[in-house]
Amino acid sequence: MTFYIHVYVHREAKKPLLLTCRAWYKIATEDPTLWRTIAFGGWIRGVHSSDTGKTLDDLARNIQRTWGTTFTLLFQFPPTAPEDADIQRFVTTVDRDWLSRCRSLELRGLVWQQYSIKSLMNDVLLPPSGHFAALECFSVEEMEVEDQNLTFGILIQRVAASAMNLRSLGLASGARPCAITAQVFQHVNMLRRIQRLLLHSVTIPVPWREFTHLEHLEYVCEGPDQSNLAELSGPHLKSLCLDTDSSFVNIDLPTHALFKQLTHLVLRTSAPVRVVVDGSRFPRSLPCLTYLGIQPSTELVDFGYIEEATNLAELSFVKTESLERYPTFRTITFSPCILRLDILSSQRGYPEFGHPLEVWRHVEELHLTVCGLCIGIDPTLVQALSQRQKQGNSHEEDPVECFPCLRIITVQYPYGAEDLLPETKQRQTDRLMGIARRRKESGMRQLEKLKIGWYRIYGEYHVLGQPSTEWPVTEWKDCSGDPY
View (cartoon, rainbow, N blue to C red):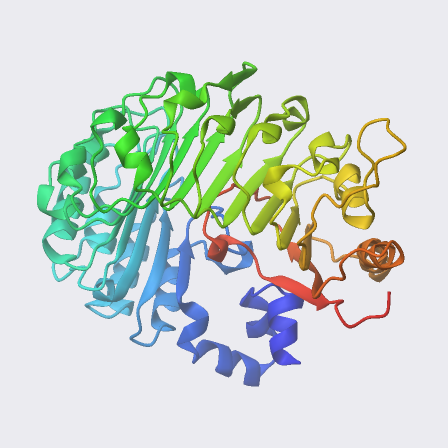
């Protein structure tokens, strides 16, 4: 019961455990697994607001609760400078080598810090004994602050010299100059250790040839593209995520040879102009590809150009209002076994769900995630899953199944700060059970697994391609054994 309340009722927030009673307080503060992620500063995505330390005393207390184990530190510089007394109390409270246990460090700031961060950096993040022996992930966001070249230069130099296990690097600039990013790019030996790289709105040339061990790249382009991606030649690169606020037409895409070695490809766009991108910008053959993710707005890539993707097992895409205007799935010749659909719009049915297209023919698993304010599943998809569909106006042809190999359906629904009413959960469950019941009545293949789940969101927006670990936990209900 304790586990259920912590995970599903409080959504893994630690503060309710601390306030329950003395016994639970003792258990919670002495269990380092609860404090593997420490957040300090403002609102941080994926961290419950009650678990975010607001003062350096909170930060010191949470570090002590790790009991000598490794941890992740999400550090956002506060809007006002801490008092010198607060900084000194922090220094004397935490153990001398606490930074050596930091497994992942993410630094974020405001658009403009109205104070010098030199003291905060030197005493908190750059103590004389500070080194980063356990650091595997390092992420930093550009900030316009006083003394940033000196203070961040020392930090980056220390990370480059001591973090021999560093494998993941994240750099984000937004609309700010890339002063910190430029300093990172100077440490060639550190770049050669990186296997996972996230670049967000970087406005300076990237030294791609130095990333010799790169396996995963996520590149987000907001504004003019300065990436020189055509020079990317990572021999170990297997996973690529491209995200643009304009159009793939304006992005300097990697070579066809690099696309052919990928096993995972995600394309996200928020282009304001309606356009279908010519598929010839991609090779006709993607022999290694096993996962393809598509998140369109008003732009779609014509994947009908791709003639071979024989190893593609999983297709993910986001259903938006704009997707309903582009029936590009009719031209696709590959057929994955797993289909993941994130539903941002259900007001109008997407007609391609109601046709026995090649892309649906071998789908065995269908995983649906209802996102944001969307009220439910696409009505055309519900109909296609529930009964055979007639094609055209002919009354002589027998209705056909659009997903003839389907064995598994899962659906996730979101909810906000308030708990869902039991009747709401039951209504959503009944809708899903109705699909299974109508399949049985119409003689369609029966489902081996039918599950519904609910996940809580704290103002977050779903982004295709992000690791599932960043999502709040889902409470699942298995409906497979229930009578239809």
